[in-house]
Image 1 (spheres, rainbow, N blue to C red):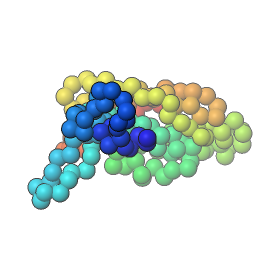
Image 2: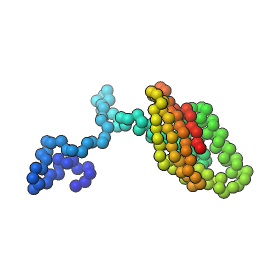
Image 3: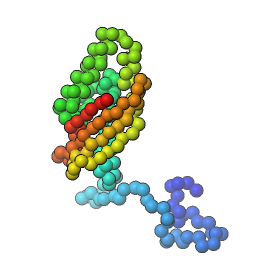
Image 4: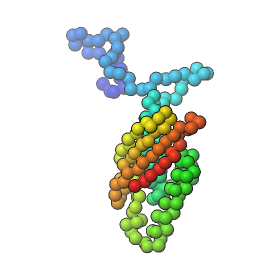
Length: 165
């Protein structure tokens, strides 16, 4: 029996008290409910929990920011997610890192922010439409903490604070 096979489709006919096909299985479904569009087609599946949305956005944004600092992602890819002040601060930090690498040629600096991986994300709701999150990021040299503040405006999540330790 595979995980995709419904419980009522596979029955052991020899087992006493085997469940009938019309009985509900004991396992709960883990998929989100499908809400139809106005035209009658199914809506795309989205997490019901807004914390899951914020957690996923935080994870992706932090990962992208670390790639900008490593020099493997262009800064403009974060322009829609970060507010202008955060974008300018991240761009300034990335430029300082690049300048210091070329000035000193230090191999330890060249490994800084390389192969970054977001290990964990914690999210807390501050008020309606405003969340704060923290992430733990591990790269080739060290582990660091990242703090993020997300605000929802016009149905879009925007990072208003980004502090990389």
